[in-house]
Image 1 (cartoon, helix red, strand yellow):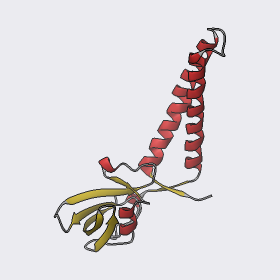
Image 2: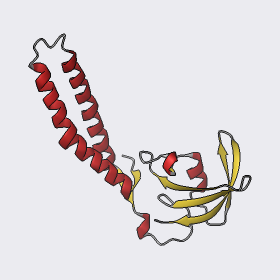
Image 3: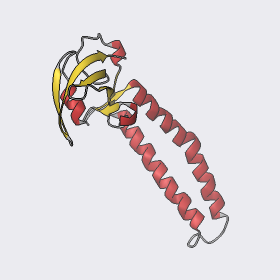
Length: 158
């Protein structure tokens, strides 16, 4: 099995979602199925079929999360000495050399990625171009809009 890299926060979010699905959502769906069964004929009972479909989605998501958590490698960058290198979990401040715009990204696992919050997947083109580089390095990242040159202003392990 391949290890799935994950930050401490990402692993905790998955555990919380798993807890919610098992202890809140699953009992709600079971109750909805029981109520729908009381309405009689199951062949033409839309409520029953909808509840069974929700149950399938819920159970599938539970299995998916359990699989990810069993194969995850939780990386806590706060416990590593900051040597200025870009690694998984690091927060990187970049300067676009063409526009002088500054952006901040944290490199996280695929499930945690959210570009609106500045969280980019370790498998994204930007992250792959940054991994292993150091503060003050200049990197050229190939994006769908063309090649963009960034300067690494700061690397934080937080």
